[in-house]
Amino acid sequence: MSQSFPPIQPGGSLMVAWQVRDKHVLVVGGGEVAAGRILHALNADAKVTVVCPSACLNPEVKYRISENHVAYIDRKFEPVDLDDDVAMVFVAIDDPEASSQIWKLCRERRIPANIADVPSECDFYFGSVHRDGPLQVMVSTNGNGPKLASIVRKEIAAALPANTGAAIQNVGILRRKLRETAPGPKDGPKRMKWISRLCESWSSEELVEMDEKDMETLLGFYTQDIIPAFEQVQLKEGNIAPFDGSMGWSC
Image (cartoon, rainbow, N blue to C red; front, side, top):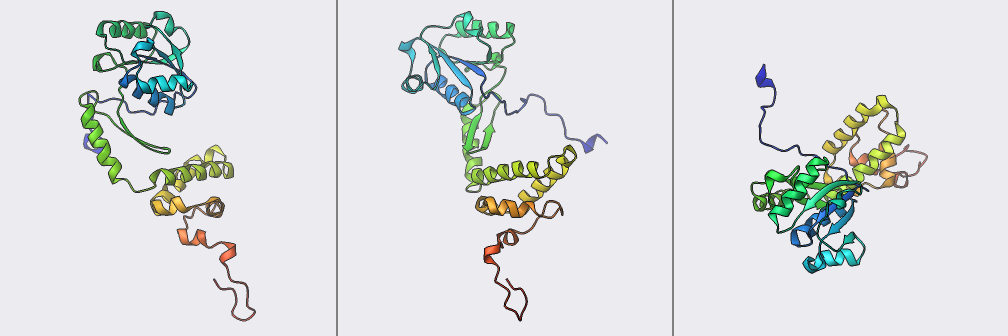
């Protein structure tokens, strides 16, 4: 019976999409690694504060500060920096002792933290990420080989169909419309299955080409639990020939 279930593979990480929108993320450091961390946080709509002496800022971090993308404190880290409702901390400084002290403070306050290049002092790892609109694909080596993660991520990205992000964007819009059409809690499983079947039946190119009118037509098939062909949905009113009085309706 045990063979019917997936085997346990210890040593992994719990891969999740952590929502930090409007949450306070503290970045300690201002070099190249910190710049990458800052970009990750900003892409996730976090409110970012950078703590670093101005002499240690690289050009990208200086740009983020000058454009008010981030809040900035021009000095070294102090424990008080953790007082302002900090949800997450990224440490990227060339001072192992200071980094460990920040790690210990974060643990005391139960604030998740990542200490760059010190896997043993990380609550989470940064993977290599491919981004295409709403699509995010992350490859993690659990701190063992960041460069290998980058190589694997590029291979995966190259294998993805073109315009995958645009197709996902359209499916997201359709899902929201479907929730409005069938908002009941009992409709949840049916909605999920119907959308899944659509994604399996239509190609990426068809999902990309789907416009607002197509979505409205498509939703008309939901109550019948039918997934029409793309060509059926494209058969709009404007493409139907008028009645000629003798041969009936024709398309």
